[in-house]
Length: 278
Image (tube, rainbow, N blue to C red; front, side, top):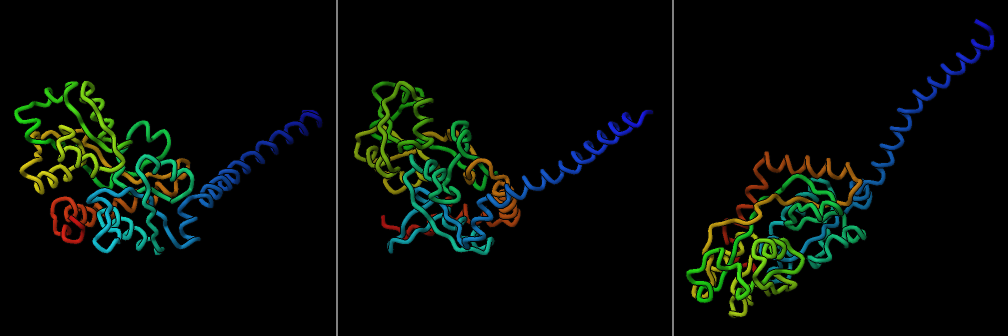
């Protein structure tokens, strides 16, 4: 082998070795960058987690003193306690809650948000921390004797909260019916109660609770649960550390029974009802 060939071979081996050493270093640098940019690191540095949510009973609501209570508030406070930080809740209109997250108004959405393909193009979802389905609440006199198929008619008026899953499901399941959109769940229910709409749809136990409070006017005539799904935290894309932490936290709360106990309290009982204005 000539000296020139040996020099060329040595140079090639040296370059290969250098590249091999550079790859782990580059990977480590990338991992450190991801960690430093994670919202988990930001929360630890600032000592507070900011949680975006929308107000709807019994997920998140104000009590008679104006303080926030509900299932999501329990979840958020427990999460902050386990992270060793303070918690700040940021009530936000539902149709603007994802843009607000992307704009940095808060760190995470914990607001009964179910996964959809469209939402998942914009945000990442954790594993489910709760499960729910949609029920139909009707004005009894206006819909007596009707089947689900009968509700899919141009003469039928549904009411729903703008931008929420029920509005999408109603449009898909009852495309022939009219759909009135409102900014709050309460407004949609009030339209049914006032006889201005035949029906509305919302996550259980809201329909059962409203029918129980207004038995002479409202009813839940169908056992069918529409769009049964899990609800997850929503976080900005590109943050694997946040998904890892939140998923592990959720798994631990399922194993301990804490999530089930809190969910049962808010959704299977009304022991909390005297805390809110009727």
